[in-house]
Image (tube, rainbow, N blue to C red; front, side, top):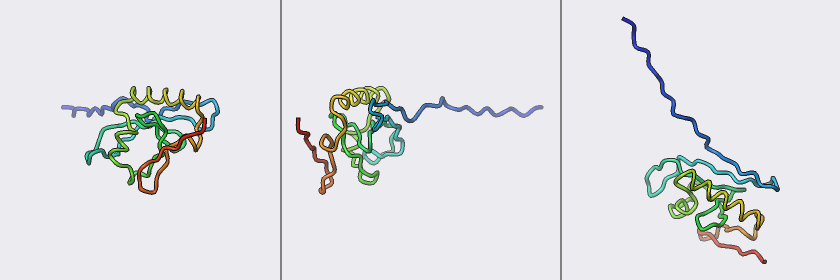
Length: 125
């Protein structure tokens, strides 16, 4: 009697990073899968981040400084992560359109405050 062959099933591979190439070719926008982040103390499935030059595109449609992993709060993760790839794709397209109208510059970003929160900087028109 022959031993049964073991079948190894491999789930369908999926890209973990997608890129939107910007015309200036300096700071392209990437959509990245983030699997290891915690939210409310529980390990989550894949969540998606829309990133550009060290800044994350948030749900309130602004580029915000991406803190180190140990400094990311639940509030930040809720604001800067998307549950599904289609949501992240829509957000990235919107970020690209806004970035074309207002190029990424230090005056248009939210930066880290000394108190640990973020502070919006406004650009002169």
